[in-house]
Image (cartoon, rainbow, N blue to C red):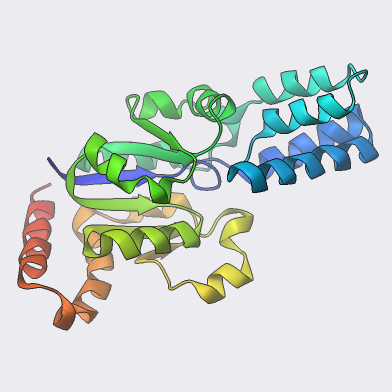
Length: 251
C-alpha cells in the first residue's frame, strides 16, 4: 500500500498527439493523395466509434481492405511504426516523471490499441522512465478497480488532458484522487466539454508546470475542493486527508 500513486496519461498529456496527427495527415496526402487521406480518416473515425479508442493501424487495415491494390498504403504503416515519438514529448515531460517518481510510483495509464500504443510508449522512452509501470485499457475510467489492484494506494494523483475522464474518475474516487488538467491538445480545448464538466483540482497550461509544485502544495491544491465539501465528508475521510498531508510533508 503506497501513500501516493501518480497516474499519467500519454497522448496530449506527456506527448504531443496533435503533432503526430498533423504529420500523419501530411504523409497520407503526399503518399496516397488528398481523397485517399480523407477516406483513411473516415475509416479511422468509424473505427474509433466502434472500438472506443484511436486505432491508426486498424484504420489503415480497413482502408487497405477497401483498396486492396493500393501498395502505397504499406508505406504508411512504416511511417507510423517508425515515427519519432521520442521527439514529440512535451518540454520537461521526463523531468516531471522523475520528480513525481521521487514521491511515489508513477504509472502510465492510457487508452488505446494493443499494438501501436505500447509501441509508442516504449519508443518514446516513457516505458523506461516509469520503470515499466504501464496500464493500457479500452476505457481507463471503467477500469479503476483493476488499477487499485495493480497499484494500491491511500491517495491517487491523476493527470489527463481529457476533462471528461478526470470528472468520471473524481466521481468514483472522490476524495481519494487529486485531478490535474493540463490544457494541451484539442480535447483540452473542446468548448462543450469545458462547459459541461466541473474544473479539475489542479489546472495547468503545460505538463511541465508541475515542476513548480512540491508534493504538499500539489495535494493541498486538490484539498481546497475537499475542504469545501467537508460538511458532507465522513469523519474517517477528514482524518485520512490530514494523515496524507502529514505524510506528504515528510517527503
